[in-house]
Image (tube, rainbow, N blue to C red):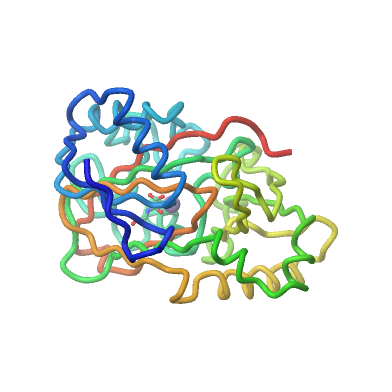
Length: 294
Ligand code: OGA
Ligand code: MN
């Protein structure tokens, strides 16, 4: 296995080659990948044509799968294209037809265009995500990643001190509200209960490398003890700061890429593409963290 950092002397993003992820890996191979995802935050594997089961098997070396679905009827069980071990972040239905402009599933998926950390709105948020590309688009649809450790380390002292002890409320309701999608109107009272905001610290320490990160996400709608408008101004400023070019990696997809990222140490978003005409088939497995953060 060859690990090649994106840039010399950089601790953000590495390319992993000379390994076939279809095969059962041994302890030493798993250990190397584990060490490098903790160090680089993003690992890119190219030319891995994995079945869904192979992607699940590979993912499970790194923890427990976070299952998807069940929280709302935006996608009915009978309409699911993939097993609940995978998050379907494609723009197509069971019959491989692209979602129409006003399909709630499409609108909901537009949330991925905002900078976020996966499942930060869950009590036990996601640790790693693994996203594979089956069909890619001709134009647009890049995925961007930003290094939240470097962003933390480069903060001005007064801001670093200010955020150190802050807690934020995260909810899908907040991120979808940013898009003008009012979940409280679109979903039943019972469904809405599943999206009650959860509190997360704004600064986290990563035990594997002792680095601190800004735990930011567009799912944040309120800083504990703050007004919502003050929160939104402050959080938007922080997101703008933390996603500057110097902290960012832009991935241009090829078919059969697999990207593994650490949601504690990075944020990501997908860029726009012609999603009502072109098919983009992407499948994500997600590894849950160990425990609630507070
Ligand atoms: C995700 C996500 C981005 C993309 O799967 O968590 O945000 O490029 N996807 O589809
Ligand atoms: Mn995501």
